Image (cartoon, rainbow, N blue to C red; front, side, top):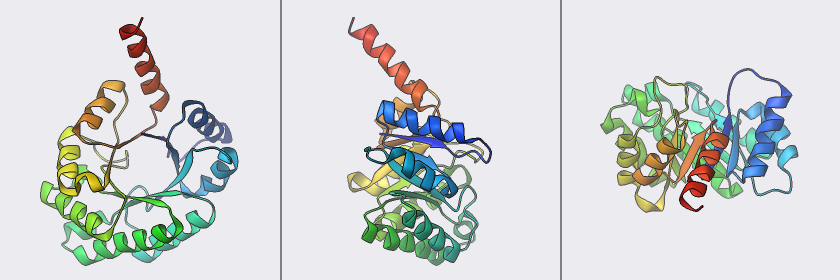
Length: 220
């Protein structure tokens, strides 16, 4: 259920090597990285079940729909098997619902024929509940695979309230990804109980090690 992330704007090759090594060791669902690292991660993870996910329009969502579409196609051509795209938050807040809808439809339209999992990032910390519900309905109608709370670069990350709201709107037919601020096992489990089906975090190893300790305590 865990998307193991390294989305910082800085770092060295050792950071990416470690990310992929940890993903392989722990069996994480995918590595979430910036598009420039896709080819490297594909090479490091070849032959494994770990998927490579590219963050599109990241982290602000303020690229044009055309730029996002190019980014998506380019990432897929380079080997990405999952795409997490930030919506145009300002467009949503200005009432330009058609623009947000077009972005999401293009995301799905590019990903689906290539059998690439797609996720719509809302950045919930900036939105009203009505705006969150609106994007979730558009994503569901458009055939998206997941709705996702956050980039991790906003003023706050996933909350139990938002996960429950998103899960209520999209239902069991779609995935809900909780990301941003998930730093320990307790928080991860809270999100899962609220309806999250994926957890995006850079604290993946810490969370799994906590889980192992809990298992040992309860199963001596």
